[in-house]
Image (cartoon, rainbow, N blue to C red; front, top):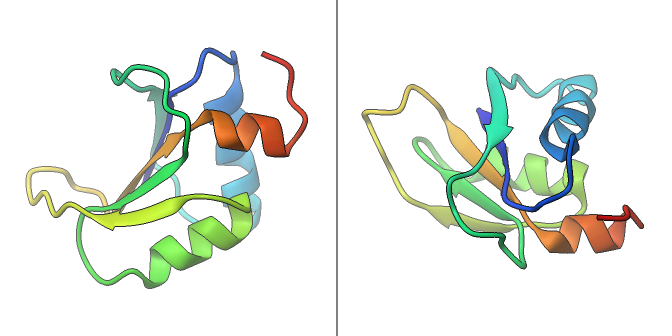
Amino acid sequence: MEVLNATRVDGLARAMTLQLRRAGIDVVFFGTAREAPLDSTLIVMRRGDTTLGARIREVLGTGKIIARPDAALLLDASVLLGLDLVSSRGIQP
């Protein structure tokens, strides 16, 4: 899976990648999203069922799971971190 920061908070994708990896979830890439800042975290399922999405949401404590299959991406899921994650963790932008 990949973790993309869709906020203006520096280091958020890296911090959440570390947390997901500690929980046993394989993150192969993290970086900055091209999308404008998002209010809510999105867990986008690229292949398979939503079981992984539910696990990701459990670890992050937030996130809306949506299915958007994309065979061109060699990923099971993309996580777009939103401002809801920042506010729920008390992170200062």
